[in-house]
Length: 268
Image (cartoon, rainbow, N blue to C red; front, side, top):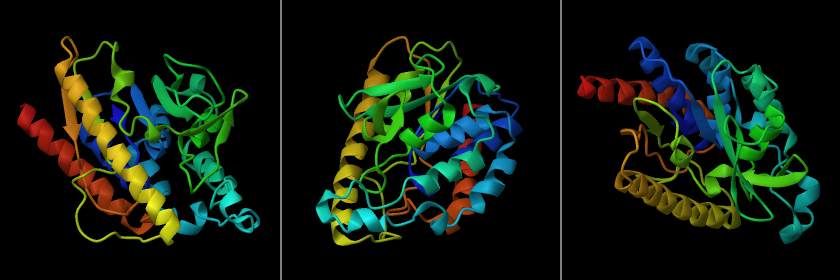
């Protein structure tokens, strides 16, 4: 199971996980980045999707978005628009484990090293590090949040390189790979659900386009490379500007369940 980024829309991962469980299918490896990494780690801990969704549905904007007023006084020299501590506390509420070793199922999380721009894998098949540190780094999306430290280096959101990190699934012995795309895409429709201040909106738009292009390239590369397991691709929602649309998480979970069940019916 490969879980992409997308903020509130990643609740769709929980619905998809519930659909797989209802169908008697057990994932053998969880892979995630950005908020999808948090969901992946929570599911890899062995908790039921419904239990995790209860906590996700209780999230409010203020739980994540606390303006960095001191930093904003520095204008364009501010390291980020928002404080880092609230999202770290949120991760601690959502994920009961504190190390990769505590997880019941192998889990791989990606983040981008600030100094080199490399996508770095942590957990199964990658570096070991404190789980909460890694998840905080995986969610450190600029310009909202500052980079986070892991093993003495700083990292940004892994979605900047691989919004749906299917490359981490290469080499895993499995029947098929399920990838859930909730990150920005060129297929996003309708008006933006939330419109941030103009400078942040400009960065959001540019980063979103780059992410959308990266997703298309990665999927094309997978399809063109012989010997890889079948890739089941889900796009449960294409809402625009919904990263912090906390009130919609239950709906996104339902979208993920329907999308996964539809694919499973087609596979039969």
